[in-house]
Image 1: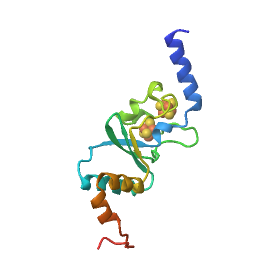
Image 2: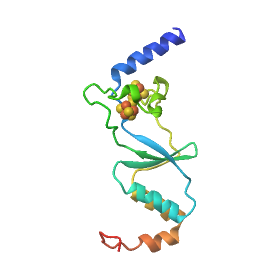
Image 3: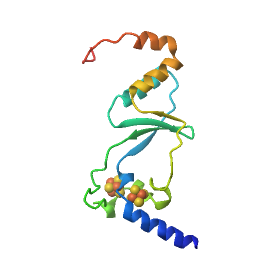
Image 4: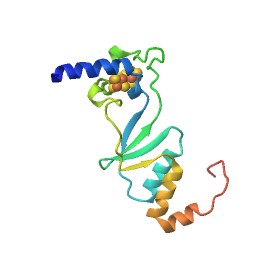
Length: 141
Ligand code: SF4
Ligand code: SF4
């Protein structure tokens, strides 16, 4: 089968199966943490719901699992297609989430507790001091 035909088939298959997976999250590159405070900032990101952090090919990303407000749940189409942002225009069948296969993260943090454990390994003494005792407080004072 020719390459063009294969691509067409792939696109047709995706069109049928597409439920707008790529419109249901975004991933922002973040700087590599260097010290306790940097890691603690990431721990703070991870304390929020629907957020995780992953490292892929040495780059760190804040992954926000939040659906775009312009994705229709009726037909999974973009409701602002003609004026969709640049990033949306870069999506293509080749980098579709359906075809990319398994993610191969170097590191993955699902929530702040996982980051806390990681900080415990990286900074054992400081982590024991800071996380060793836990007090119940709802305010920042
Ligand atoms: S603007 Fe449209 S294409 Fe872009 S993420 Fe939202 S629904 Fe998807
Ligand atoms: S890349 Fe295209 S086919 Fe894949 S989920 Fe996004 S819109 Fe659907």
